[in-house]
Each structure stands twice: as C-alpha cells, then as structure tokens.
Image 1 (spheres, rainbow, N blue to C red):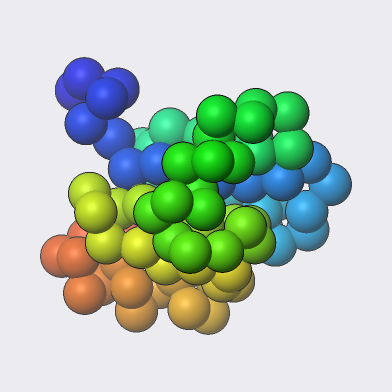
Image 2: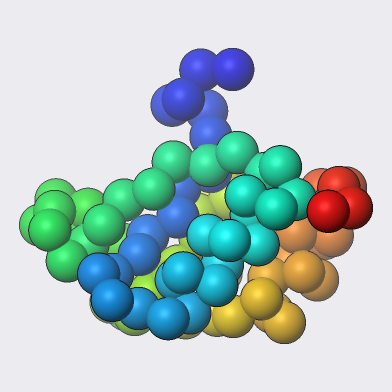
Length: 88
C-alpha cells in the first residue's frame, strides 16, 4: 500500500495517550503514518488546519478526524470506519 494512502496519526513527544494509541494500533495490525507535531512544525500546522486544535493524539482517517482521544474513543471510531480489529 502506498504510504500516502495511510491514515495519519499526529502525536507529541512524551504523550502517554499517544504511546497507548500507537501500541493499540500495532497490536491490532492497523497501518498508519505517524507525524510528530513536537518536532515537525509543518505537521503541527496540518493538524491545526484539519482539526481546529493542537492536541494529540489526533487521527486523520482519510478525512475523518478523531481529535484528542484515547483507546476508549478510538475503538468505536475505527468500527465506524469499517475497520476489523485483529485479535492480539
């Protein structure tokens, strides 16, 4: 799959919710592109433009935005996008 077609996960350095979400996505085999807004000002600008805020994690799932969330919010969001979660 072309990496440009993957969902984008915006994260911040040292963010415990970001780490939790990254671990969840890896455990369930969900591919994504990671953008660290702590070290990449262009990624931060894109995050704010897309979501209207600067909190992380924020997920851009092909234009559908889930901002400032944890795993509890991520699971129903992924189900709504038709994502089947692999069992770990």
